[in-house]
Image (cartoon, rainbow, N blue to C red):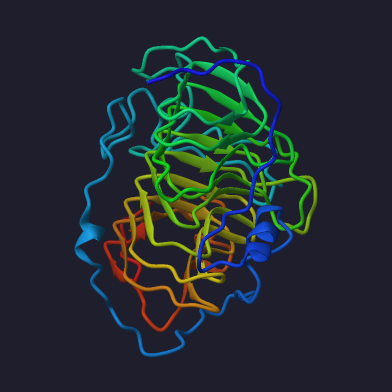
Length: 365
């Protein structure tokens, strides 16, 4: 493996060119000019599916085990040294203050992002050094380790790893990968948009395809993660979407076109009344082969969306997720401002084991 650390200029991100997606549409989404949040419910009434629900079992590939996590991560047992729960900041605070509370068994500040020696963090503390390498990565197998990075990283090579680092950006995407088979890994890293996203639609900090996130702490942009293609997000804390304007429709994880999605054991928080913790809406291509398992979701309009649009969303499992509500320390009384989930598709996902975090009561589809 090679390590690059030579100076270069920042290269602006390129639009994802997938066969099923128009180049113009992709470019508009990348710049925040289009939003996948249109035509979503604006009231508390639960949307009805467009056809009779069909519970579909995903193909064999959907049962792939979670990515191996070599460093300690949040588990089903309480985080060592962390309180079970304390009340979050006031709802609708605009995203300027990251939550200071933790939730037992889920990712938090002391087990995501670069290791800083916080109480309860068993990972080895990292002292960051300034990154002076290229902002466009073109050498396969490049490893960026222990760096403080300022600016947008463009991935143009396979098997790149970013770990034990911090990336800070202002009004631009932090990391862009446009190859389904890039095999980009971002581990134990903080990604901070600094609440400087001035776009209308919301700039995702990480996108769009060919990546795996492990123990990432990402926050402070209109959207946090976009998966249009292939993506895995695991054991990560994604929170406080926001920017400089008031028109953004904020999503923590969003997809409008995907062939493989794994969202596994993350803590996802959106303090706004719109739009989501997870938005899966087949706007610019079909979405299939989806597993959303063992996540904690808090806030948004509805916390979770599963939607047909111009295309169909199919072959999904939504299992063992917990939803927070105000009585249990969450942002809103109903989980999301309007409720926990909005499902509107001809084929609904397999839905089981989803419950309120405060009392374990099951939430039906």
